[in-house]
Length: 135
Image (tube, rainbow, N blue to C red; front, top):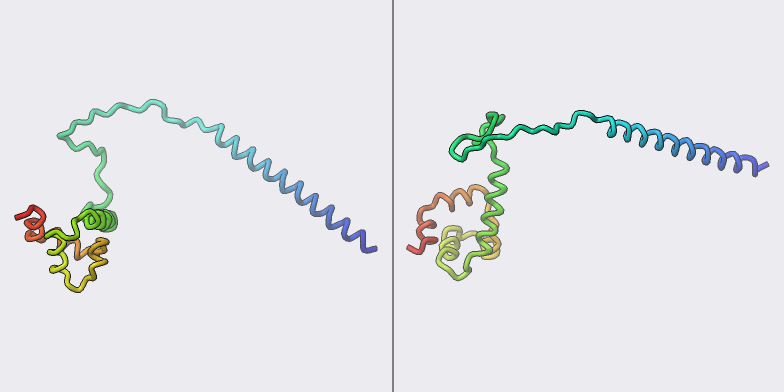
């Protein structure tokens, strides 16, 4: 008596598996048909006459470029990190940054770990420019 329910479970499982495979095959077939039936490929692209002295952007930006903060800050952080790693650790510019930020550890300065306001402060500092130029 107990063998019948086991056989029933196996049969249900096999049937369910076959139905699932049939469903997947149908889905793949439908997806393949949708991909094959695409006819809206753009093949004729008009050539653009770009001039270096003119504005080459066809549309105005959606957002004011001055309001975008995330991307330039990310670029500045990476730039500052690479700049500090390439800087001579015994040079005048490095010593100037040590004196400008006395609460920073040497490791933070060596690795170039600065936040946005500190980067702005360094970029706008005319004395740092003079130190970099060697004056």
